[in-house]
Image 1: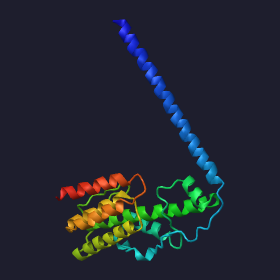
Image 2: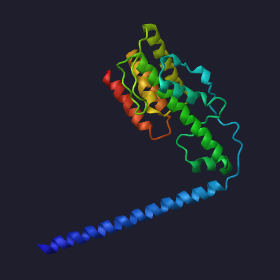
Image 3: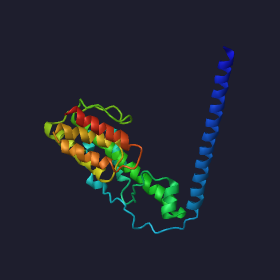
Image 4: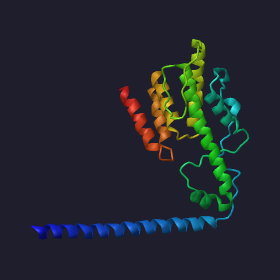
Length: 231
C-alpha cells in the first residue's frame, strides 16, 4: 500500500515544483516588462500639458451649510475651498509609468499633484453630500467609515428639503467630473429611487461603465442590486 502512496506523493511534488517554476518565470517576465516600461518612460521628453482636460472647479458653486455647526461639514468645505485656482486632473487608472510615457517624465510631479487634487475633490464632494443628507433625515446612517457620528439638528421641513436638494446637486456634480467614489453613486442611487427615478439609476450605470478603476465592478453590482430591489 505504501508504493502507490509514495508514487502519488512524488507526482504531487513534481507537479508542484513545475508549477512553482512556471510562476517564477511569469513573475520574472512581469518584473522585466515593468522595468522595461519604466526605463522607456523615464526617457520620454517633457510634453506640453497646458491643454489637458482640467476640471474647472469653483468652490463657491458648492452649497455651504455652515449653520449646521458640524465640524466635518466645515472640514469638507475647507478641503473644497483649498482647490480654488488649482489644476485638477482625473488620472484615475493610470500609473506613474503610464503618465510618464504619455506626457514625459519631467511632468510626473505636476501630474501627481493635479491627480491628488482630483482625489480631494471627489472624496470631499461625496462626504459633504452624505453629511447634508444625515442632517436632513436623522434616520439615514453614515455609509462611509470616516464621516463621524452626527445627528440631525432641529431644522424645519423647508431646511431639510434644501439640504436634500443641495446634496443631490453635489452628487450629480461628482458624477459629471467622473468620480469613482462608490459613496457618491450609492447616495445618488438612493435619492433617485426614493423619487421613483429608475431612469436616473440606469444613467448612473452608464456613467459607471466608463470608470477606469477597481471601483467599477463593485459600483455596477451595487446599482444592479438597487434596481432589483425595486422590481
